[in-house]
Length: 283
Image (cartoon, rainbow, N blue to C red):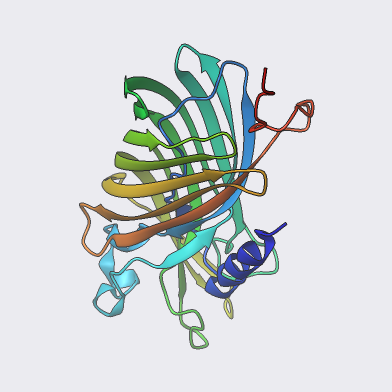
């Protein structure tokens, strides 16, 4: 319950940002879950649109000279599940959904922006308190993004971009644990490489004349690189992961921060166990 004010603050930032982009958080460690152990999670993560780094054809449709090439930072609310497989393997997935625009412009019926991830992690113990984890995964993203003026003049075209991407993520994480009887604490550093293949389409619409034109775009690739520090804290009052880092791309202008905070919870089907950090009775 003590985490609720933080989530309310970050949720307010989400609403004010009015953005529906792809989240770029990590919020995991290289320490694996025990076999059969499952944990759910819900959090807030920074997000951005890679659309400013794309090349569009024909350029004359959207007046590239006056369009910003900087990334538009926003927030997402990802939810996920992680499951221990044993033998230092772990599997997990994450999904975030946000309302977006309709391809023909803003309408009462919103489209849904979605980002989903799935990964398989293998962790290797380096020595006491140190783990090295490799967690390759798949990423899917779907979004509609405005690339023209939000309020076009009567008779002018309104431009939106529909883009879908599929890609791979290859994070390498080193974690130092510092556990005690009453809490779990770890510090992790992650180096992540990602590659996205993007399919997109531009919509040009005139609401006053009910004209709509669609222009298919050539498939494009974007490479992304991130360095992320993650802090884990679990005790009898809170179970959280916190991210801070930076991500950049091979496309001009795509340099954004990585910020994330998530809390862990037991899945509904898990029986209530004794406290995780209860001390053993003295002989």
